[in-house]
Image (cartoon, rainbow, N blue to C red; front, side, top):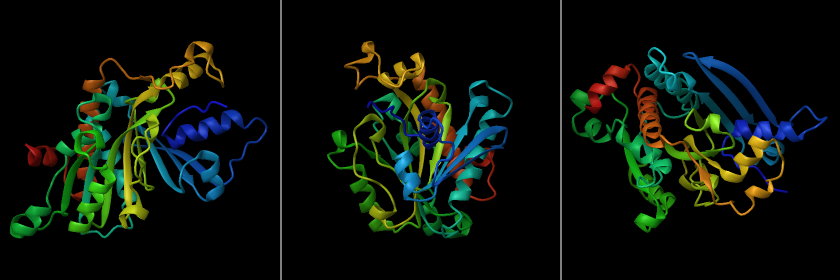
Length: 297
């Protein structure tokens, strides 16, 4: 049976519910919805191996923020979105050493726009590790943060996971935050949602190009994944639009087709800045959006 492709735990849960028929309880999974800064927040917690098998997701917490107000250009939408991401990210960072170094790693290929979210977030990250170490009298109140744009195997000749492992051995961070593009099952979530997870990530899994896992097992420290769906698998989109559980005949042979918005360059640029600012606010207590803007300028 053809399986609809998605990286979002929320959508994996929805797909399970669609196929559950009479069964209403999903064993090993908890879910609830809330709001933060005016945006919807859906939390899915995979509690054990039963839930992991049903959703095909590792055990852990998955938080999906729907940033619809950002697209509608609501008042202070950028600031509210950045603060909402920061608030949820702080919850996932709760067990991390408060003053420990954090490595922010942007994954993806900057030459391919739907895959450029990670490298662009790297540009909006407050890099402070060297300042805290070298000029503590001015920057000692900041958390040490290092940032890396890991690139992809095709342009560097090195797996992004291998590169991040090497950097971790050198600087020994307390936590790693990885940022990558994801795949969704539905167009309305493309460039409209951000998923945070404490399970790490397998780069390329959303487009069927599984690479080396980047998680606590491979790096030896907690790994938080931040992802934005920027594409929809062509066959999955056809099934959703037609309300079918199997790809229609017209979708046969398009397994490698990915659909993305026409203005993907503008949307990726905006979301990368929102995520970068959200990460900065989560890591640096007491700063405002304006403070981050001033630091990065």
